[in-house]
Structures are given as C-alpha cells and as structure tokens.
Image 1 (tube, rainbow, N blue to C red):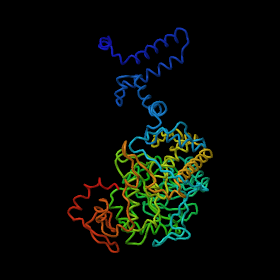
Image 2: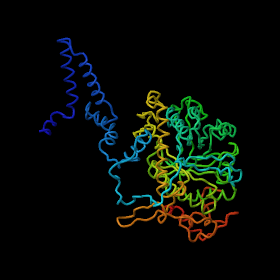
Image 3: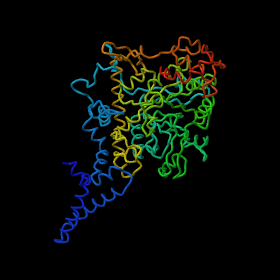
Image 4: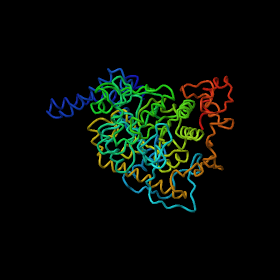
Length: 580
C-alpha cells in the first residue's frame, strides 16, 4: 500500500504538504471570517521552512524530508542529555561516569556522600583495585596534607641556582585551565575557592588575568610556548615582563609547559575574533589578533638550554619553585632532560606529569585518543628515572589525569606522585554537567563560555564555596583512607598498599605489577633494567632532544651494551615496550 502510494506521491513530503494545506485553510478562515491570523503566520513560517529545505544543498535529509527532517536534528541535539539522564547506568559514560560526577556534586554542595547497600562496583571484575587496611588504624589531627616544593626551610634545594622561596603546597590543587578557555566567573570562583581552602590554582598558559587577582588565591603561573604575559611583540620571551608578574607575592610557583595531556605535541590558536580586551590584556597581545601557541618553545632548543632557562626563570622570579609540565612522549627525550640535569647540576623543583587521559579543552580526536602516554605509564617512568639517578629527593612530582576521588589521589601517590591536580573535577564543582560543548561557547552552565549572559548562571560566591568544599571533603576522605591503612601521611602510601584483580582467581599487589628502580641504578650497568632503560637511555643526550648514537657523556657514568645498529634500527619499532 505504502509503496503503491509512494509511486504516485512521495510520502516523505506529507508533512510539508500538510503545512501547505494548513496555510491555505487558515487563509480561507482569515478572509472569510476574519480570524486566525496567528495560525496563518505559523503555517506560513512552516511553509517557508519547507521551501528553504527543498532549495538548500547542505543537508540531504532536509531536501528529502522538508520540515519534518528538522526533528532528526533536534533529537540529535538533545541525545547526550537524554542518554546521560535516562538511559546510561551510573557506571557508564565517558570521560566520567554519573557516579563520579555525583560524588563531586555531593561533596561540593556539602551533601552526604555515603552510599547504602554496599558497592555498585563488580569486585570480581578484572582491574578492580582496593587499598589494604590495617588492624591498627591511625588517628590524624587534620586532613590538610601538604608537601614542600623547592626544598624546605630546614633543607634547602641542592640545585644550582636553588629555590629560596619554597612553597608548602596542598596535595590536591586546581589543574591548569586558562582564562579564555574558562569564563571570567569560573576563574573568579576557582580562585576564591582556592583562597578559602588554602590550595593552589594553576593559571593555564593563558597567563594571569585580572580575574585571577581579585581574591588573592595562591597561583601557579604556567608559561607556555606562546609566552603569554611575558612575551615580546614578536612572540619571544621577555625577561622584564616575566619578572614583573613572577615576583608578585600571589604567584607561588612557576610552571614551564612543554606539552599537555589533551594534545601533546600540538600547538594551538585562539582565533582573533575570540581575543577580547580582557584576554588581550592578560596574554600581552593585541585585541582581535590571533593568539598562537607554537608546538615547541623558542627560548631553548636543547635539554641543557632548557635547564638553563629554568634556572633563569627561578632567578627572575626571586627564587620561587620552578619546574615544568609535560605528557610523556619519546622516552629518550625525557632521558635527555634528566641527563641535562646531571650535566648542569640544575634541577627543576618539580615536574607535573600530565596523562593522555586528561584534558579540559578541545583537541583533535586523534590526539585525544591516540597521542601521549597515559598517566600511570608517564608517572612511573618519571619517578623511576629520577630514583635511578639519585635526584628523586630534589624533585617533587605532581600529576594530573582524571583525578576525582580520594582513592585516585592515593593510587597516584602509590605510583610515585607527591601531589595531584584536577581540572574537570573542579569544573564539576563549579556546576559543569559534562555537556562536552566547551569549545562551542554554548556551555549550559557558564563555565567555559565568554558569553556574558551565559556566565550569569555561574554565581561566584556560591560556586567558590563549592570549590572549597569539594577540596575539603575529598581530602577528608583521603584522611580516612590513610588512617584505615595505618599510615600518617598520603606520602606513606606505596604500591604495596594497593591490590589489583588480575582474573577470577588471582590478585596481585600493585608493587608486583610495576617496575621499581633502585636508587642510582641508571648510573651503573643497565643489564638488569627494563627494556625502556636498556634501549633508550644510551640513545639520550643532554645536548639534543633527538635520539643519538650511544655515547658516554661527561659526568654521567653508564654502561652501554646496545649495538649501534640495533639501537638505531629499533628505536621506533620498540616504542610499545616503553610502558614501565
């Protein structure tokens, strides 16, 4: 029946035909009886839409299904919300499940976060992890766990050009998110929350805006390859402008950004149309002019030059803790940086390891999904390498990458971190609903938009309180975990405290599943080391980021048993063995 009718008249045009019929009927009613003008206008609008659909060439669906085809696009538009709220389970969804988001919302609002009737997780599933508890739990006076960065008042750093203003940081801080990527109200609320809670707020590479300064919360100033806030007109680094900002008492640490987890090895461009007067003032560029972040830095070209640049930043800042952030890529490049530390005697005060699973902003799909090392592998390699060259006690390690709960923090510390940063967790504390429209300017909660009307939805005093409460509640939960394990501080958590299920019948301590380096092991023979060290350590040079022939570098005694042909021929082929 339908097929026969369709041969005489395209059924798909029925909705449009009904609109035309409705228009004619309403026009008759208007002429004959003088009523129905609103109905006429409504049908006229629908007919106009249908005519446009038939004429346009962009959407095939609308040409074949005029008027009614728009329902498909409306359903597609609301699909994420419908799925999130009505279809998916609490443990589904990415990048964060509803259970994870609910935990942040509850803690940020100060609501009870206890759950009845047991865990919703499958404790028999492969990959399930837990913390072993003690029969002699401790009682700690406070959840305000802190770590000294840049030495301490009692033990100054041994680095050349050492830090003279060490910072006593919280073990949980706000990760790098720039003004421009976040709204003004979001920056205001985050910094006020950091001030209330006594933790640090990373500026992101967009530099220090006027909104960062209003409430006076501790800042970690991130310096990216665009040198925003400390650049000359040609985009190169300006010592004078850097010193003017870095010596501000509100700035507690300086972070040199090499790469980020969302898109490592990829630069960025903020189109000129989005560069408002406020963003231009913060970044040191002209209003309406595109902000370009190159993929690499112009202030240094070699690992040695990088260490010298870090020493310069530390000196210009008045001796504040200075370090760098990166997502692990080629292992030999990281090893080259470590060798540069040994050659120059200059060590960063801290290193922040960004995991490839991290990322608050938009990035090309291929970069988000397939570029950069995940946090566990990157953190382990950084920690083990510093232990292997006897520099671990001089360099603090921070990390970022889907850190939401106290268990996330505990696990990262078990792998070698001294503190954790969170970006999306604090965005959720601001009210983010994971709409994933951050890059469109249409954020429904005012967190990631520059639209002044949308920003009004984010009330700064209320959200600042939520940011502080999320931090406090998470560290309180961490305190309870530490106490249950019979420890005194999160730094005491090791891989021996974490258990992972391998199969239905086997579980193992995390310490038995990861590589652990002995102090100084990389300064001697490499025979017994993991392949990543045996293969790539000899290829690294303090004087180049490129892989080179195995050589003995001055003041770095190490044993090389890797044949040159094998080293060069397999440098790329064995990349899969790089995970520690």
